[in-house]
Image (cartoon, rainbow, N blue to C red; front, side):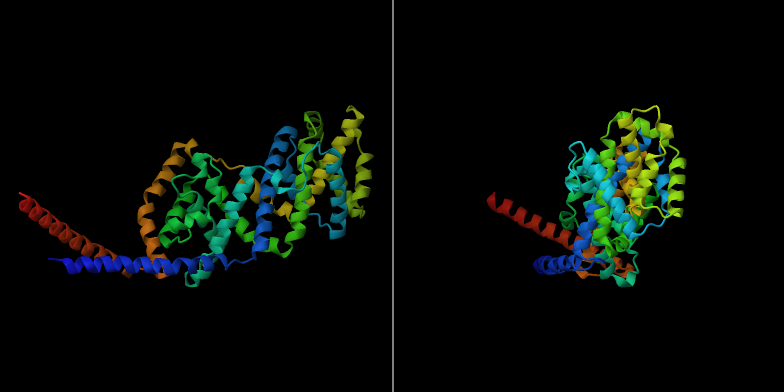
Length: 406
């Protein structure tokens, strides 16, 4: 009958398995060995993002409690250029403030940040690493590494049946490497098209844009990674300390909610080349608005506000606040809106077809062309005919067995 055709089909399957076995280890080495920064800087960036996201979340809460427009203040303060020597002195003052008023808070540790932000930072840096490998692997496609990072973020952590946004399980943000078995790292032009449409209408567009910005900023971070990370840890400690001072102090800080008075003092101080210590003394002599507040509380309000301004002046941290707030304050529940849930479901419906194209790209190390699709369609049709013949052959054998048995 058609025994030869069946043997051919089996040989094709074995050949495909052999190619997979040989190809996957090479891809693993390739993916791990091609990033725009080394692994040490990537690890530091991961810690930096977690700290920035946690700090941004606390600053958002501080805004709601005090009325101080923190991000408007940060934008205004960014116009003041501080020297490294000046910043070093400010860091000493911030450390003193945090150590004196930390109320038992464990300082300077990523382990003190919320698990959600640690998980998110790992997801973002994994997406950046895999995106860089994808760009290096297909240079002829002229892929943008930053845009590719947002696509990889969706591929690994959204385009799946169990995203964190539905399950609340942090492992869904931590299993990036495990997603290789679903070829999440092998996104194709069709994936990018679907993801672009999804992002266009998604309520989480600012999150995906933050991933793009995080990817674009990693080179800037890597140039001075250790210094930026160290000063960010201090800023993080300061904001944590302020948030732990108690409701009374936070309410008193609302006196400074427009920051105009303080910012004018800072501008005057810079014009007169005052050091951070001199500015601290200047602050202590300008407490006219705090006369009705108990002296201890007034001292803490001044110290907290001054430390907040120093924190907002920290180089690097100031520049990354926008990325941090976009990632930190996203809605983690895409099911909250029926429209958003429907968008996610629509994307998932197309997964099986896109997965087949990923398999081709993974096997042959090249994107599938229109000609490849035509060839594949022809092979599938031929396979269907051969499979039908195989079924007829099996049915004939079965019928012969029945007749023989009878």
